[in-house]
Every structure is written in C-alpha cells, then in structure tokens.
Image (cartoon, rainbow, N blue to C red; front, side, top):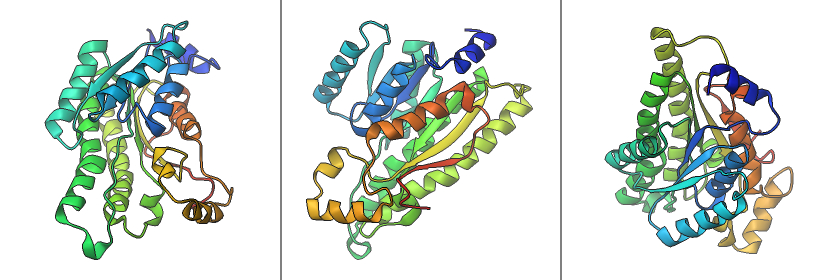
Length: 277
C-alpha cells in the first residue's frame, strides 16, 4: 500500500484501516474485544492477545470469524505474560513474523489486586505495576522500533479514570494507570525526535503517534460483580447518569488509529461521561 493509497483510505468514511495489522492486548474480552471488533470493521487484521484462557480466546476468535466471513478480515491469537519483558518482545515479534508488519498496538490488558494502602502487600503492588505499566513499556518499546524503521505506526494505551481521580483500595491500580500518562508523552516525544533524526518526519499523515484513552466505568464483566447498590452510587456520580458501553471506548481507539488522526500525539482522551472534568 502506497502513501497515496493510505491517504485515500483515511479520507474514506469506511475502511480506514484496510491493510493494517493491529495487536490488541487483552483483545478477546471486555473493552479489548470491542476494540478488536471496531478496528476490524475498519478493515484491520487483528492479532488478539490473551493471558491464559485459551478456550475463551478461541471462542472469541470463532465468533469474530463468523462476523467477518464476508469481508475477509482475519484474526490470530497470541498468548503471553505481559509482566515479562521477554514475553512482550516475543509476542510483538510473533505478530510481525506472522503478518509481516505491525501498524497499530493497543495496550489494553490490565489487572487489579485491590487492598487498602495499609494492607497492600509487596506482591499486590508489584504485580499490578508489572502488568499495567511495565508491560506497556516493554510492548511499546518493541513495537516502536518496528514502527520507526517503517516511519509509520500507532500506539494507543488504555488507561483509566482511576488514574486521574484515585480510588480507595486501588493505590497500585491508580499509580499504574496514571503512570501511562507520562509514559505516553515520553514515547510520543521520542518518536518524533527519532523520526526527525532519521529524516522520516515528512510532514504527511503517515507518522508514528502515541496516545492514551482513559475510560470511566464501562459495562463489562468486571462491573457484573459489583453490587447494584454500589452501581447506583457510581452512576449517581457520573454527570451522564450511566456507565459506558465498551463500543464507546473502542470508537475513540479506532479514530486515533486512523491516518486522519495523524496530527494527534502525546494526548490523553477521556471517555468517562463527565466523571472527571
């Protein structure tokens, strides 16, 4: 695909991501599954990452293929431990080896291990930071090298409104998600610096951008476990009076992945119904 072809696709209302390969971590469930489907509807091939539940991942892949049987959009599954730098690098290399390229990295996978500050163990702190922050660094580091070599790419991190507001019992989660803000800006600045130094900062839409999306409370399996009284309180604190649907987050991700968003980098996009404003 030439630069002119890519630019033409960006100006088209559909098929903005035809020919692209997107690696979505945690891409087989919840917000990640919605992101995978949203990117696929724009024509992207999906490499969906998962931690360890192969049966769930294969069920998602089967459902995905049934939805895209007519448009030819493909999906592959990639298992990995995001807390491991070696595994992150292996997974990115595996996607590139299987598909020949990596255009979009969506760092969506994350975990919680809640406890009050007084009772939080070293293991709970380290585990959440390792997956939610260090894993994003390792994956992005590997993807960025490939994207800088090609002169084009998109890295989109999925943070959380908790990283902006904090939350009782979630010091580790809040720290990991707010850490993504600084990481995003550092990666965005260095990407531009490296492209300029190599003469690949040509000024067109095709560049390397790094951004973060911060969802508020989203209707996923995680909220299914929250008691209704607690949900009522959460909804009462949201100006829009409801939680988000996963697709509402996914649409922002696919917008940032498109070439038409090529002038946006180093930014934090809130999708929270006004919870933090």
